[in-house]
Length: 364
Image 1 (cartoon, rainbow, N blue to C red):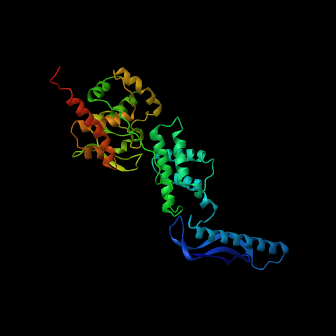
Image 2: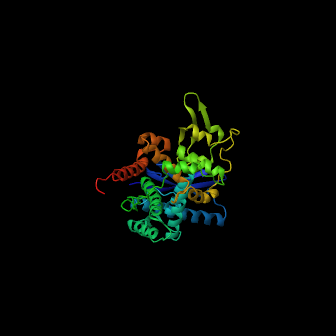
Image 3: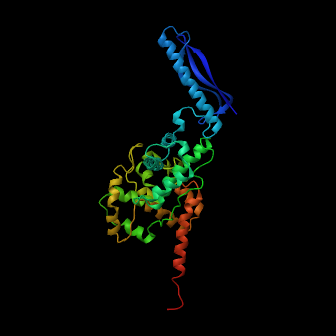
């Protein structure tokens, strides 16, 4: 077992800095590298001259010794590994750092992390040490989310999954001896994905809409499978053409940050309108506020279902599979990292096949 010693090191202005010396070295919880020292940011006078300086040395050395003793107990307990300061014993602070580390991911993913942290922060009354995070607390947090009447099952599952991810990372960093959330989970329910049939999409294409930019963007989504976020930020420099490949888009997905090259049809290109400057947005007038008026357009086309903008992406996937495109190609066109994500659309196709099979009957 490592031993902890209180040491002094000479610094400027006739002072000495206090630090802890670990022997043998212990693993730093963040860098995961062996370390021998923890600097306490405490100092004493090398040659105290006044009574004040002597008292300062006495109290500071006593404080340093108390910290040394605390570190020794922590190492013996083996609960949290090497803790640099009191913040390292604060699970909420660790969870918040995990949230902040997701800022470079997609906006939606970061939002889910922030919301999950907000719920956990309220659940714990803004105070939670690592030692407080037990399997029982995880179950209680799961039930806390379940009791929120404004949260659907899949939202509960998403938020609890982020909490579990934070626990898993803390365990990997030796801040937990065992993952307290390992055996606790919130299951998702399969949601029926709404989509338009080919006939409905064609009917919608000839139905006028007061927000022309949104109309063109919606139909463009149905022909390309792009998300709203990617269409909204699409610039003319990303629209390219070659004799061999025709029209295609080279862009970075807003959600996954993946670099994509997506071929588009001539019809899809025609929906883009007149080419502008390279850095100019293709759908410059497109905004989420106008999406609130989508139901009016859908109703005017004689479609009596709840169709959101994202349903046009579902429409693209379902129609591609219905018309014979293999699932691996569809997965690539959608920018999915894993074909399993695309398989949900294959289930929709299977259901439609079953419906079609039952249409032919020998008995009246």
